[in-house]
Image 1 (cartoon, one colour):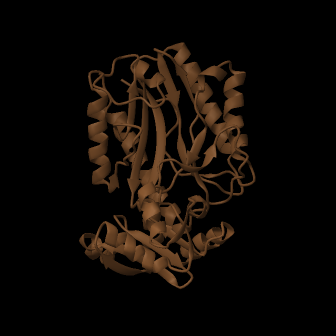
Image 2: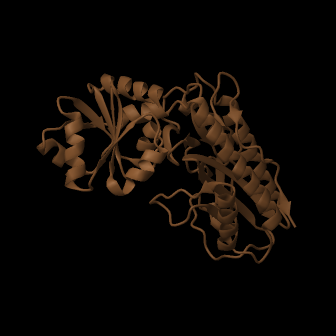
Image 3: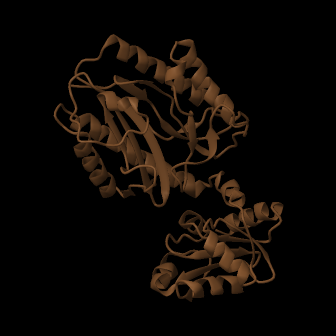
Length: 355
């Protein structure tokens, strides 16, 4: 935790701040090991975790390398926070306007700037990589379960329930994000043509392609992987599209090395799909960073000139989507290296046809 604190403060100084304050649970966890309602304040002297009394016992038990300061919720929490940052210039990830204004009215010199947090979190340490790799292995096992469980007459919702149950048994938890009502993407037949399809009660049918996009959290960290299965017969067009997406994903993995830009990785996937005549049907970016958030920097899209660095964790996930027919996506979580990346997902990328 000390190295993370030093790195956050270094990036904070570049933004003109000498203290960093985390309000978001992801950043609080990153700096203290505690996930919950609290504020983490990092200074040159150390980290203080300001926690409401209802969280104090849990914070004391799970936090690492920090001093836990108990307080009450609401106005007292803010007053306690302000007392810790007096005579300092503080950068924070707090996006709540009323909270920021309350801090300023009480004399806190605070600037909303998430860059120091995301700049530091971009590069994963060994412990983080180990946890993301474990999360990826859980996803591999869940894709194995898909191979065994998928059958005609089973609904998307039934399969999601099975996978969530099995994932939690293995130590994972579903992430929660506002843009969807479901933790997973399970999309059969024409639903697979929607990259962010919501899980429905539609039942799988012979001749379906089924997109299974699994995102789960283990020990705080996210892994993300997608495989596309076939049920029963597979048309010539489906085989062709699947082969193109697989080739595109391989090109992206080959390009995802330290020194390449995010845009170059996107181009490696996109150009191949365009050469095969499906350019207009690849309708999203190639990938994104993963870590404590499901989607975080760096962003693998065509206009991003950010350079990849060793130990960044990203996804590579090209896809082709034929409206009202089917979709194909293949995705791995990877760790960027100086050569070919460490691909964390090991479940086969051969087209599996479930009978």
